[in-house]
Amino acid sequence: TLAGARPVTLLCAHLALTRAARLRQMHWIAHWIVRNAGDDPLVLAGDFNDWRNDSVALFGEIGLSEVATLLGQSGRTFPAFSPALALDKMFVRGLTPLEWQAPSGETAWLSDHLPYIARLRLDPQ
Image: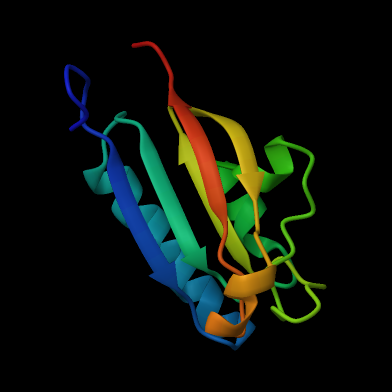
């Protein structure tokens, strides 16, 4: 819970490489959110391995929006040395994205994916 605010649910995911397994995992996560997260603000982020962008439509059905897309960014984070795919995603509900970036340079060697940073504003109740 942020000081003086309602709870914010934070979820981190690292999904499978195969589409069938990813879809099962995404459906499970969506079902968990619907059952457990109520209407509180929520962030779901991680490595979705989702080059087909199935996650955007699926999580959109339960009211989540993808941050890079909302901000008109490509969202490309993979591979770190020359980002061409948007495999890493951040979905939000009850928060307004203000900024999204995938810094490269000195952080690019830390993983095969670039890190990403988002600045979010908690929506009024």
